[in-house]
Length: 460
Image (cartoon, rainbow, N blue to C red; front, side):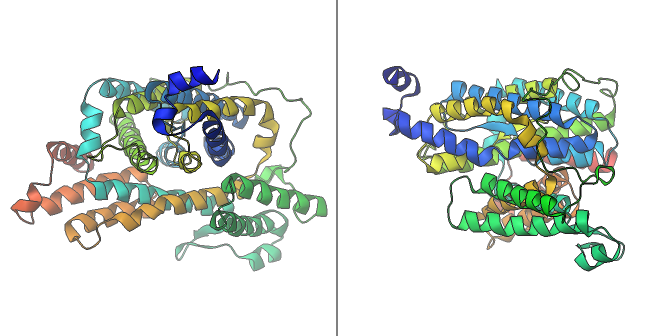
């Protein structure tokens, strides 16, 4: 068995072995398993059944990760992207008013386009054409966007008529009688952020998932103590897993193959597809670069061999995601945890994929995890992604200013797509007008993207 694995995954060639790969795969799963709780929580706000989304999330993580292992032999995993699911819910469905069926159709169409582009040199060309500083800025901006989503979901950040947003007031919750729901959950979320941060600082394996479980456990203690009182009408559910129906796997029938093509000819639908397309592209590219660098998989020119295989795996997984009922996949940054444990081949991914599939039988547990327990994970993942900001060339204004615009636009405009659009527009505009040397830095692909985004803002 070990010889067969060695032959298929080329373990010795990558300086690893079966035991190391299995441990790395388990570490990646433990680190990324919070996605199984967070993704259903976010997408359910569109009206999608949370149980069905959980099953779809597990299945697409299993399928996508196996595809990545088969097509690349890299230790990367594919899961629903934590930025793209927020865009799916809060921008496309809640802000723009599209149904989740239409949003899934956009994901499916995006996936088909991605597959076509991945079979050509287009996506590789984009991968190589986008300036590194802008790639880093996109990663950092998505980190901030995820952070504000987490703070909002935790209840720590609330709307304010005078300052747009403000911090939750415990005193006011006591006065108006909501401390047993909104008040205690906000406090628990803050405790969860601190606990998760401590675990990260102490390099505890599976720190994010452990932070979720600790925060959730504290909530259960509060429920037993009467400090937390479930109020389903106000959105505060019981924190105890419901095993009354056994360990039956929630059906994906309510959301699978529910595509709605009625808006496919509209300009608005096209803009959503493009937004998904570019957001997903840059999210995947950024993670691939960072993860491959950490695993020493980049060649001497800084390129990733067989990047086409990685992009094709992500494209196929995104297409399947739209069909079975979840947001598009992306290479998860959490795979770096397994890489840090020595994972270097697709055996890491296969191990993680199998563990994803086994988690189907634990759905009552994952579905009982509340948003105040998963919000700290979003904040900490946001922190991890924001770390890319330190690699930006801040001493070069023509690089730094577009990067800054892309970063701040995402949280302040509450849209990943706007940050990407404005970052590209500002990069081309600034460098095109500040000398011949700077103009030479602008590739033909960047000019095309600049034109497309200008058309979007000024004519659509």
